[in-house]
Image (cartoon, rainbow, N blue to C red; front, top):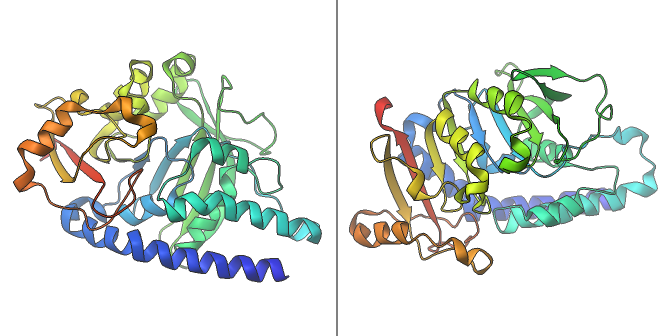
Length: 327
């Protein structure tokens, strides 16, 4: 189909641009700045990830398990072979629209994604995750709908549409995707969960969701473009959980605010520049973080790429937090 050929060409151009602007430099940076963690076979936890598989896989390509969550519904993957041919162009166009931000800006715009990932046969985060997995050179092996139940137990569902998928449900549903780099390589898994992480909603799921996250300990944790949610008191449950399960955290300033890192627990290393958030998040300016960058300017290494909300090279920041008792 012409739409399929056009889609392939657009994706190839977008991918090459993404590699040039971020991925190649990010890989080299991770090899130098976090060599002990970069290739470590340990769970990678990515709070507020959306379907951003590419960045997580670039940072930790050997993680046996990736744990993602976001507001976007997990969705389902329809049988393309049974899809009417006249529906394929609209679905491919929707995929292209959904990927514009992550390819060009290095983050998903949550509200836009929620709208874009609905209303077509390819809906929810699952098709995007699978596309990005394949684009990274992986072979997708299996897709299973999952649910977390009391006590933090994960169960598999017989049908992906057997329960309603909304982030405000009192239950937590998701999808587990099994994949491998090539034939004979170890099988890796990604679990994506859709839920609202505010304390108001999370407290009703605390027994199942937080218990499950705590069972992941210890994790390598990555946080980027997280809307500064864990700065707020209303996201204290998820913030405290992330700090409790993590041995290593790589984040930009939109993750956990500096004031929540206990100086006796964490060793912090800063990169890039910090001049404050983009305009829409201006109220989350961290004066203590700004002073930290100013005070230690001579010792802070630049970032050779742009990442997060400030995707232009020379404007963004990252922080590595290592748990002091594991140094």
